[in-house]
Length: 638
Image (tube, rainbow, N blue to C red; front, side, top):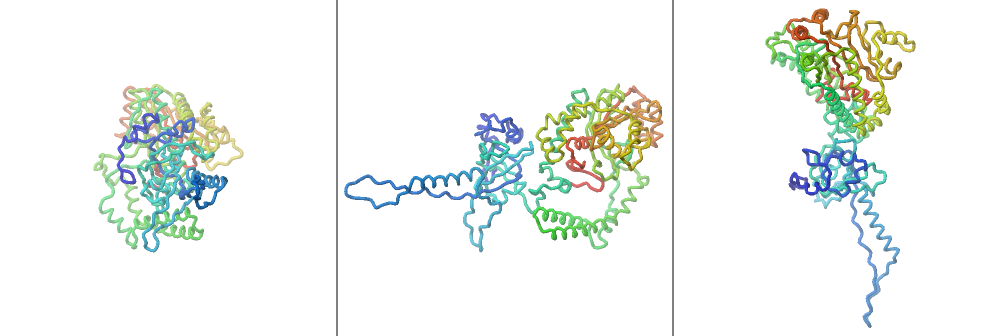
């Protein structure tokens, strides 16, 4: 049903669509803007075609329709009728007639082309309780985007087509579905040659401008994180999301084309190492909830109420900044927000001791009564489980979320990240490094060939050098050297002082890797043969008994994008490494050792960190802006 209450059948416009030869968006019965605008001729071949389009308003303006003056009367002498003569009528010169006609044409041209006087603010027509006269009519010019591409389409709508007031119709974020005819844009400076002259509005989804968090101003990415459910409507986040989608498709394409089988591995596991998230249903008993409630409200404040106030005050500050309010009002609002946030922090601290005591003493919990009957965690890596399928299918891969419970707040760390992981039977470390290098270069080339418009926009908005870097990476070989060589280079640095001294045996830090890739080699590198203490227990021990067959693919400005290793296939050595790392073999790792007991084979694999790959591909400064809903230490919004 449209805004006038008329019902439109789903295939109403199909009679016209068939000869138009414009493919419809499957399952939504409309034409995607990408289909119209990303043509070599800018869409000129579609002129005169009838289409249905939909999208969200990115910008708008209105031109008030003015009544056209009646044409001037022209005196024509009556034919001679003998003795009678008509009363004299004033004559009009030919020049006056032409000028009058030209004024009419100018007004008509202003309306059609979007020129003329614009009215961004509309007046109310109800005065002193009197019934309003008919509101003025407008020609409204929308720029809409439907997410299929970076491009926007101009839609021309007569305000009489909608029962929604013009002020609501034009608000940023409004969703409209319109049916009309494509025509040529009259503006010579327009990027696209076509626009839609709407004849019907099939849908209008309004917004409340006072509560809608986005504005016509470009908001910093860090401010958008508080509104993760709306930020994909911004041009930058929309482009990054399409690049993310392309990287996902490219990953499956590369691996499938190279004979890998896709396998789903569990998100919940009983094995692993490092800081892991525990999964349990034993916490949160009723008495614990009552205690927390008492702690929250004993001072007369509810922490939920205070948190709600923090959100409301944050929204107010965003509104003040968007509305160009005076500086004093913004400063006062920020000060008020700080006081409320401090109160919320104090209330949270008061309830923390009991929760912490529960978390740090798991030995007091009887996990046999838990949901799984044992201790369970969110997985850090899927490669251990992949090994069992590599031992049967040869080459396998998986793609899924991985969780790390490190309390780190940085621009390169998330608590939940997505990894593409592979495992290859009958392969060694060199094979894994070859796979990593080819995979990485394929992804770079794929973006350049398949997401040209988005990469062009990101290059303009985020990082001007990103396209050049991707092209250079896709066409160049990647230098390889050992950890020992890397330490030697770092120790010879005379113009750089490192917070962590580069002694042999330490884990390479972000500043070490940045120095190697950004300043010394000025490109991507692969570092291999690390000390066994800094890599997982399952990596294969080298003959020197000090290093293991592991590597990192490191890129400029980001750090490690791909990790990989040849895994230990020898039972005795793996069993000793598990015990050496303080891990218990009972139950948790017996199945993993079984793979060495029965039909063992040398094998290797890689793990690509998708969000870090996206950082490299877009030049974004913070990893929190690479995922739809970032989860970090202290924050899990939405």
